[in-house]
Length: 310
Image 1: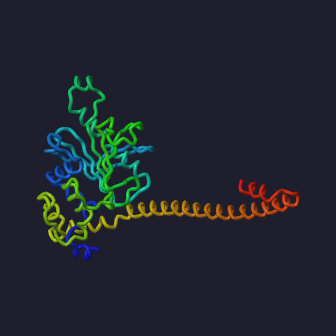
Image 2: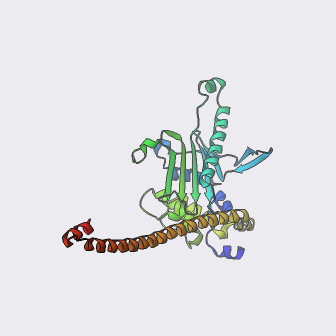
């Protein structure tokens, strides 16, 4: 694998150590967030700090379990962000998104409350920070209609209304399906970022006419510029057996469910066709007997034709 990796021009940015290396650079993280959150004017992020990635969870049977964010950051104006790179589909994917978002929210609330005075907390004990959960997925996400879905808290009564706005804007989810991305007109910087995640592993050169920040990312992804230790770390991430087997199990279960559904539908269709043919044949046989009976009992051909038409 190391030999094959050295033949590439760029690292695959969806691999865990590569993904984290990209965002070690603060200005890169700011650029990414402004692009994907589509922030403009005074809402744009100008300063950000990365905070610890690990979160402790209590196990049901006692003891602690460790949850890990890929990228966990806080903006200068108090917004909290989690960015996750997901290479393989898993069961309960939506639950995982919500779990991570909940962890992000609780951590953000604890941090925010620790920085206000007792009087401020007493006046607004339930005040919550703004949190953003961004998921980059290198597999086909079932609920994505396009390459990007923005999720939030909406009213059921607003379903179908294109002008509908979330009733709670402090919690936002952005799910990106990299496999569905096709370059098009739109948010130019977001498009350039997505081209990195989709095309870098097979690219042979840095694309022309990209923003300076994007060019810098490509340059840091160059395999020839990395250390041997980092190369080994990347190779190790390519053979993550836990991720592989979890993804394989999910794929197998979904394939079985899809196969069962198709088989059931095919069986029903075949059974319906067979039953319909049998019923028609039986009905025609009964009709023929009825016609003969009516003819024998003097029913006129005109009245018989009218009866059959009915």
